[in-house]
Length: 80
Image (tube, rainbow, N blue to C red; front, side, top):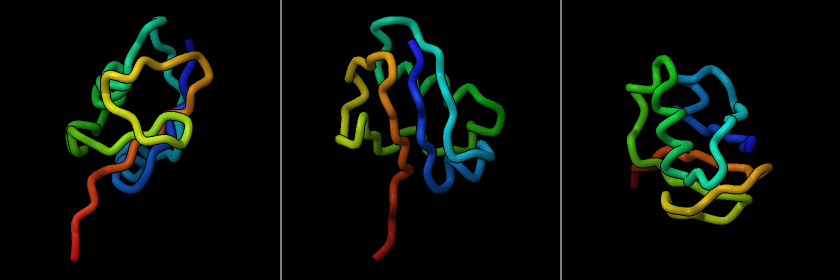
């Protein structure tokens, strides 16, 4: 199955693009997709626990993905 990943802030900066497509096995979870992203060159500098949304709804890492889903990856935000 193919999932579109939307990258924000430091994820987009480090990986050099705002989106990418991932080919994942059927039954893959958000966690599986994050592992794929974190295996990309340069990704070792990225936060390990980003906020994620699937199809514009916040999701947990154990959420099972479906073909055609859009996964947004948002790094933690700090400040005051």
